[in-house]
Image 1 (tube, rainbow, N blue to C red):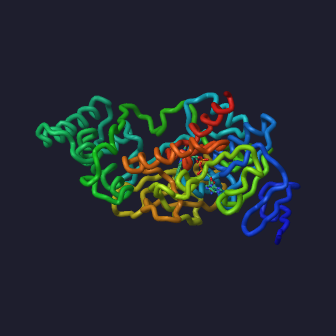
Image 2: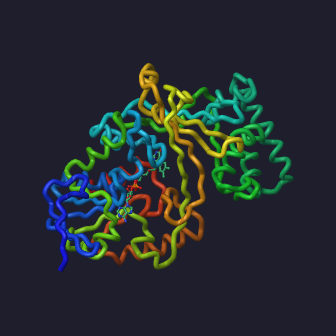
Image 3: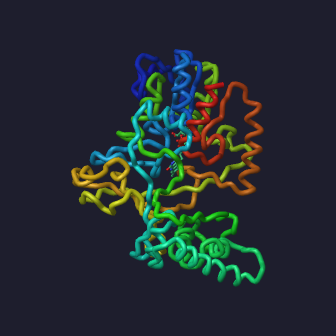
Length: 402
Ligand SMILES: Cc1cc2nc3c(=O)[nH]c(=O)nc-3n(C[C@H](O)[C@H](O)[C@H](O)COP(=O)(O)OP(=O)(O)OC[C@H]3O[C@@H](n4cnc5c(N)ncnc54)[C@H](O)[C@@H]3O)c2cc1C
């Protein structure tokens, strides 16, 4: 049999393990407790707790690097969030203490700005926004404005329920906020007119009658000092890792020879060969470039809320980690324009589409997982569920605390 011995040439973090490759199947000479497919936060956190419990783990990822969607690429000394801006936030002290025990987090506070045809507004909707919108300075004046505009929208419905997103949003915040900060931004996100979108997409639109631009209500938020790759490295410190290794092209048929248990964080439908059909996803795409100025937009996140620009927002990555004088100490900057993009086969599957059709298809796949002994399905792709970072970590912590 034609066997090729590979001494870690394609390995990312392996010291002395020998792999055998025959017609695209990889055989491993060491036996593991866990083969973990996917090095995102679910897989990496699982590997952390497993190795701390004395278990041997092999982590594989089909991408050329580890870390899943939190991976950062260093460009001009700046950590660029390659798979979309990631801001860690949680109310869970245990999760916060855990991640900070691996790498301290900085004081980044998410406070996005909206740009509507050159007019700038603070987000989320708060007293700063209302002052910029109407010149009002007290909560009473702001509330009166909003209530007046909400009443107009409700009256226009003549007693019927809102039939679409536009009517719903007008009833929740009135015409000025809807027109300048919601309508065209939402249309860019969904690629459809707000009148053609269902009302249920927007159930609530929180407004704050305080001068508070902090986007999250959580007790803790920040970015790992040195970037997310430091967190990934700490989580995977004691695991063996292979990059550029797709489960379906390597261990699909042989994983039981490699490990006792499979932890699978890839796509749910792909595991079952798409046998019941494909689950839909939403995606975003990015155009990233270096700008030779030290400070391009003065904030990490600026949303573009009109159709004047085709992108939904611009991320300036340095502001996640550089504050005060450090911003100008670095003479260039990296920005990413973010575009809402219709998902097509082969693109990054970012957000599950939680409509009736996809939810019921996902349920049918989930019932198939029950017949897979010694396989743990976890994370956003395998559970077909949107997770923020902290809940993913919390879920793995709970699994190991049991
Ligand atoms: C655009 C975007 C922005 C986000 N922003 C935030 C934010 O600001 N704050 C926040 O808390 N959360 C945010 N999230 C959510 C966060 O990214 C997820 O909670 C987290 O990444 C989930 O980790 P995971 O391990 O489940 O998935 P992932 O990070 O996607 O990891 C899955 C890994 O599995 C690998 N894989 C898949 N199939 C295979 C295969 N067949 N073989 C080998 N490897 C495979 C993939 O390459 C990937 O590396 C954001 C998500 C997106 C999409």
